[in-house]
Image (cartoon, rainbow, N blue to C red; front, side, top):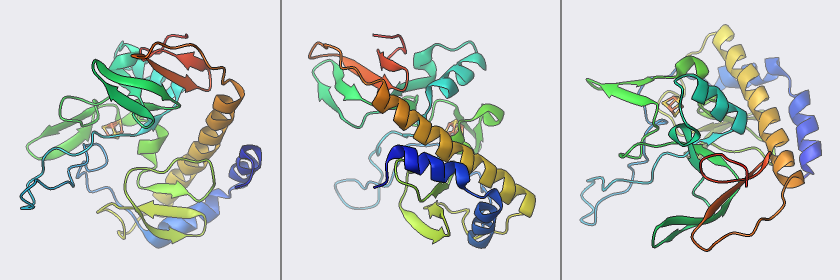
Length: 229
Ligand code: SF4
């Protein structure tokens, strides 16, 4: 893989018009099914009869400044908005423990995103205008090393754009919407790579107890409530 700095330079050089062409050729319209905001319920019950047994909780990467922006939408505490990304953590007797390098959107008791609401079968994001870039660009990602991939397998690719499993793929999209998505996709790639460089450059291991969780983000080591260690 290229260095993160080289990938960041490539992200800054991405042509929004080319990205919009790729998005138009793949096609997308959100059907408001809520699949990208809910727990992954693909897993089947032990009888193999298709009954979901409660899959993995929803995971979506959120940047530290996005956490603060979301906190401001409702006077929320850090923990109301974000939780340590579970990858790399292990389950101890009193809950998760270990080190991780990202934040994920907080989930509710069902494993759905804490900002997702459903009434009479219709899903809704309660922070739509302030939703993180990973949500604003779903189900797309760019084919650059060091960028994060959303939930779901990559199922289509055009130019630098990858599309991940989503029932809205293949639908017509207006040029204006494709360009908005392309701009957000480019911004997300730049922010992800800048965050990854910050994590690497600010990484200073701290002593931790065996039952603690530490999140090393681009601003240094933090406790699960977002405070500096
Ligand atoms: S912030 Fe909104 S769009 Fe993003 S996962 Fe949560 S409910 Fe869905």
